[in-house]
Amino acid sequence: MSILEVTSLSKEYKGGTKALTNVSFSVKEGEFVSIIGPSGAGKSTLLRCINKMIDATEGDINFNGESVKEFKKKDLRKLRTKIGMIFQHYNLVNRLSVVENVLHGRLGYKSTFQGVIGRYTEGEKKKAFEILDKLGLQEQAYKRCDELSGGQKQRVGIARALIQDPKMILCDEPIASLDPNASKIIMDHLKNINTEMGITCIFNLHQVDVALRYSDRIIGINSGRVIFDGKPGQLTKNNIHEIYGSEAGELITD
Image (cartoon, rainbow, N blue to C red; front, side):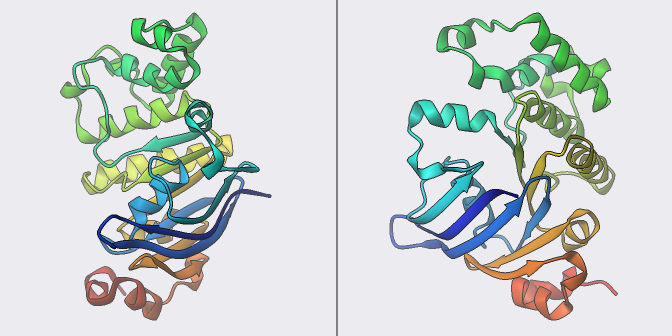
């Protein structure tokens, strides 16, 4: 059963720049999908359209049986509790502790007043510590986030997404700022979350080898258009050349 259906999606920015053109695909519940392509291909725009951080120009996005473009402000807050988001640059509040940042993932469930005063239930706090334990961050729970390494910060970002109790997690270049060892830790955690918890994961990735290793399915984008959509084993060198153009040579290893 599909949890996400993207139909004839296009996005044009002011000034006439076309970021996406007629993009269509569907994602099954529990699938682990990587979207690959060069910088500027439209990958980030696509994810931001899916959770309505920006509005598409044309087309439709259907998440969990509902049309995303029909959501108004109040409903959008509810939608976003079911779509976790993990960012390349973490989007944490550095002066706050790890556990405080994780609990921010519950703000979508709170009234404005509860959010402002930081009112969380004992159950929410307990769950935050359980998630941190699962991600190997229990000893960092009370540290300020600006004291953490990049890999640790990204694990805090994952914890913040998980405490939302999402059906789907969108990851926008989650390992682009990390070294290979930290990248592997992050990808292993996310793959485990996908397989053990059944949470659908959609990734933007620049690294073809990572997409091949972890994905159930790969979607290749260039200049805002879908160039490839298939299983990792179906991705050929020709496909990679088509997706990445002149960059392809440095991405292909025998």
